[in-house]
Every structure is written in C-alpha cells, then in structure tokens.
Length: 618
Image 1 (cartoon, rainbow, N blue to C red):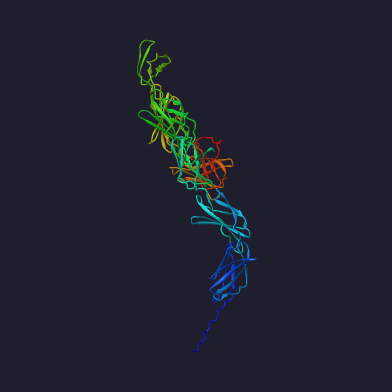
Image 2 (cartoon, rainbow, N blue to C red):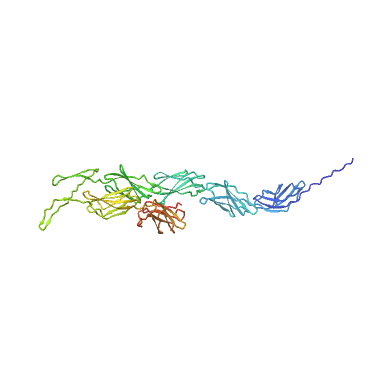
C-alpha cells in the first residue's frame, strides 16, 4: 500500500498595518483613536506612550479609546492589527494631548439683588477656558470664561441649582467637578392682603413662600416714617393713625438673601375726626360751627339731629352754618370727615348744642294803675328768663289853622304802616355751602327773616342785623332770595328779590397722569357738564395754569418740571369769568418716571409744607 502524504495548510499571516486617521482627547484621562479597518483583523491593540511608560488596550472596532491617562499630557499613539497569525507592526505614531485637569475649590457667591451667581475656582493645569453649567429641573444656565470666575445671570427665585465646572483646552475637556448645590433667594410673597379690623390696627398677611426662612414687612407712612416687622409667620400687625397713607412691602429671606421686590401695596386710613369743633354763633334758628382742619379729610359733613328732624351740611371748608333750626331745641351735632378713598369716618364724637329760646308771644297787655302795666305771654321756652321792655307809642293828631289862629288838636289816632323793604341786597359766596346775604336797612323794620329756597331745601335766618349767614346750601342749585321786614309791633313786608344760583360744585377725584411731551394731564370727576374749570399748580420750580373746555374733565400742562412738589387746585369758573377760591387744595409729588406721575402726599390740611414727600409708588 502506497501512502500519500497530507497537504499541509500554510500558517496564517499577521494582518496589515492599520493607519491612524485621527487621535484626539475628549476627557482629561483618555484619548480616542479613529482608523480604517484592516482586512482579516479580528481586533486592534492601541498603545499610548508617555516617555518610558505606556498603556495598551485592545479594541475590536474603530473608534477606540485609551483610558487611564494623565491629564494635560502629550502621548504617542500607535495601533496594531491582530488576528490568529499574530500582530502587525505598529502604525506610524500620532501625537495627541489629553484634556486638562478639572478645576478645584469651586465657590458660589449669590447676588440676591440681581438674581445672579458668581462662580470662582482654582484654575486647572493645561486649561485654556472653562464652562460652568447650573441645572434646576429642566432649566439649564451656563457661562464661559478664560479666567477663574464667571457670572450666571437670570437665575430663578425660589429654586435650587446643581452646578459643575468643566475645564477645556485644544485637546478636549476635563471631567466635570463634583456638583455644588445652592439655593437662590425666595420669590416675592404673593396674595398680600391689608386689613384694618378696627381703627388704629393694621393687619398684613401673605401666602407662604418656598425656600423662605423668615419674612420682613416694611410699612412707610406718607410723612416718611418707616417701621418693620420680622417674623417666621405669614402675618404682621402694625399700629396706624387716622388720615395717613401707608406703603407696604413684604420680603422673604433665606441664607441667600432677600427676595425680589414684589408689588407695593398702599392703604389709606379713615380721615381723622374734628375734635375741637364748637359753636361760635347761636341764635334761635341758626348755629355756626367752626373746627380745625384734620389730616386726611377732603370734605366735611355736619349733621344736626333733634328728636324728629335731621339737617345736613356738606362743605370743603372747616365751617358750617346750620340754618332753619327749631328754636329752644337741643341738637346732637356731629362733624364727620370724608375722603374719596375711604369715605366718611363714622366714629366721630357728637356734641350737644341748644338753640336760643323762641320769641315770646304776648297775649294781653292791661293797665292796672297809672304806673303799673300787666303783660301776659305764652311761656314756650325751657328754663328761660323773660325781660319786658316798654317803649312809647307815637300818635297822629290834626290841627286847623287860619289867619285867626289855630284850633285845638283833634283826638290822637295811633297809626303804623308796614316797614319798607330794603333797597339793596347782596349775595356773596363764603364757602361751597355757606352764603352771606346783606341788605340795606328798611325804614320801620326792627327784625328781618332772610330765606333762600330751592326745590331741594330751604335755608332761613332771623336776625336783628342787616346781614345773615345762610348754611347748608347745595352747590349748583338755583335759589329764590326773599327778605321779610318786620316792624316792632309785628307788621310784615314780604320782599322777594331775584333768583340766585349757588356755585358749581368743586370737582372730586383729582389725579395727575404723564403725557408723552413731558407734560402732565390733570383729571377730575364732576357731574356738571356745562362748566369751565381752571387748574392752578404752585411749585418751587414755577406756577402753571390751564383751563378746560366745556364738558371736558381734564386739562393739560406741557413741559412741567418733574421732581417737584406741587399744590394743585381745580376750581369752577363762574358765569362772570371769576374763579372760586374755596375748592380744596391737594399736594402732589410729581416724579420723573412712571405713568401716574402724581401721588397725593398730604390731604385735608391747608399747610403741609413741613411734611416729607413720600416715595413714588408707580
């Protein structure tokens, strides 16, 4: 038997030498290599050499990464292909530099006022730039710098951020630093409510704010005085005074600082009550009340009440004449203060004022003896003392005369005619609700009854003088003026003169608004549509006047200097073109920013020059 020898297979060959296309570093401890695949190679051996030391790793496909390297170090990178036949020769070496070290000692400083964070760190060896990233939920903010600090702006209030820093150079980036967490300042408190459960006590409350440790409430009054409350609760209490406007700000705090400024709330307390009002003139049908102006009052209402009747007097002046009262009557008189914002202060005290006694009615006069006369009258007054005055009665007699002489006088006949009506009558406005009427003396008149009457009400005054103050006049109303001239024995002459129109009402709701041309618009409210109004502004930088057209409730002043305090008076103009002088004055701070340029800083007092200007709220 002939044996045929086996045909032996040739041993496998080592694969071809691969060629590195590129080598680069993405992190500070690794280099990534890309190459073209070699036919027959089952894997590849990557080698990174630094001087005499080298690190190898086997990779199956391109790209491959060598890890465990030193940061910011240049390595020679080569690659061999491997199969069952062995390893190829190393490829031509490529140099690649690893990324830099990561920064160290990362510090965060928070700027609460601007809601930004300043990040500082120790520079990393081999780094040319740095990127800082801050994460909060789905939000990410970052900043880039070539120095050792940068600022991340526009942070959200009430948020917790996780922050890390990465160093970079031309080779790549370092691994991120260990995360640093920090909290921003809490957001401004919301749902702020201001209540005055009883006069003199303010309650400020708000909703709870996330990440807040405590709260501070600042309350500043319109005279510049500021107080604050520090609490961990969501409510604070403050003492308040009548007639003040309080500006209220609520801030939340934590270790990062103060929350942003939220809305500024204002609360105006009820105007103060006149406490020193006293009657300065009392007659049988008229009482005049005078008081000092009080803080916060724009108008006053005087009310006189007896057991069955009520009389009201509304005026901007601090004087009221109550006419057409009942004689010999006890009245409860109250002066209420009123402001447009808060309405009337209904807690004002009442005083008791009695009118003078009624005139006695003589029912009989008899002569008892030659020197004794008995007078009987109706005693219709309480606790009154009566005084009787006797005068002389003049009589009329006739005497006949001829050339022969004079006759004896006839029997005397008493005669009295009705008194003459006054020839002249003048009506003068004193305030919006008080009118002074004066007249010439009527021959034979002892007393006078003056009446102003309209379809709404009647004002009446009984006096010995030839002038009279009539109160409780309604503005913008037509009245009929009449005078009764009464003789000593009671004869009456009815004297009707002319119709009298009371003044137009002073406007309410005076406000200032900014115009585009550096001017301001003065606006007011009025129910009368056919009245012209004139506006006067008095300030340290100049005085200004503007007049509105008929049926227009505003007027404009152009090029008015801002940053000044102005006294503003809006007054109706009479038919004769004269300007009324008794409308209330308001003091405004005209600021240089915002849309509502004027803010009332003091109301209800004629002279507020010594009061500080409150801060702008718009």
